[in-house]
Length: 471
Image (cartoon, rainbow, N blue to C red):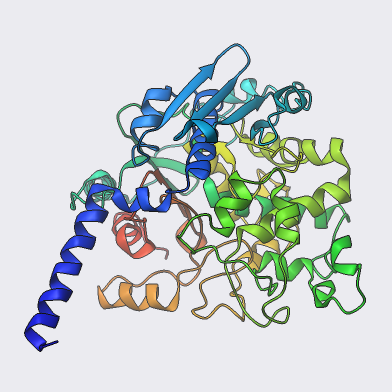
């Protein structure tokens, strides 16, 4: 092939890929599995309607707009959603009070409903009357001095702009905290302060907090070998050497590819085609010796959730996030869903308001102390934001992300270096909680960014430029 013809072929291929991305057909390719598309749609519709309190039409149009030939039926009385992209692949998702939504993959809806725990989630509505940050009442303190109000407004407005018609940001909520106060808050049309938003993988950072509480209570130690019986059935099983620390740092060595995008993937199979996410994850073989390679993994987060379940027993396990974390810091909207096996899906299925995510970020900004009470053990936040040695670009700590070497270099090239102590929770479709203790700043960004993920060098420097610098 001549250079001219080769160049033309590359150009045409690039144009075709751009058209596919821009039109959303890439997502159609991701979900060509009719069974997976049906399960995914049923789960998102059920959580959207019964947990987020959104209309099914909005979810179909926005979250599920890329799935062709989607049909669904909602039973509001029994709180179920059945969805299908082909009649033979109908899947039903069931809402269970206290435990959220799970897929009835075996068709036994009644068995799932019997697992409901209607008294599990406490009524924390009274907390709203308390002053911020535990509640939403004014603190009585004056607005922090030294804020460039024009710059701050412009920085937040830019987060809602759509500079590229193909790679849309679809920002839905932004909150900026400075010196413990909300100094900026904005929502897209149709969303507001009382709206629950999906955390997706930000759920993992909340699981990190629960592990801190479990360590403080003496239930587990990060040095413990992961107590997975399957890994101890054979004497020569090298998985027996995996520790809780390795699972939190995602250096277990287990075979799992988070970023395989040809369905059905490890991730989508685990979350939408199996009744027990942790059981699926624990069956993975090793592809690296434990603690020798880093690989981002939703699978190991679900193993960690299962381990907590064994350590506490079901009643205390289900109560743990609500009693020891959400109640104490005022996260009164937070809901974490369990799968059909009953294990809380801490890789992906937490829902809360933007203000509650901001509260969680504030807990970490203050080293795990809330209004004078130590919630997390001393040093636990430092553990979260200490780079994992096996992470190739120093981009990950323990269930929290760090700006990678590439992020830092790119920001420096722009003349806006990122603070050394910045760390963040991150989730699918661009969910973020940025924590910057040295600047007394927490930034929450929530949305539906299919391709334009919200990266730290894109908008955090604009926000920091509007806020006072430390003395």
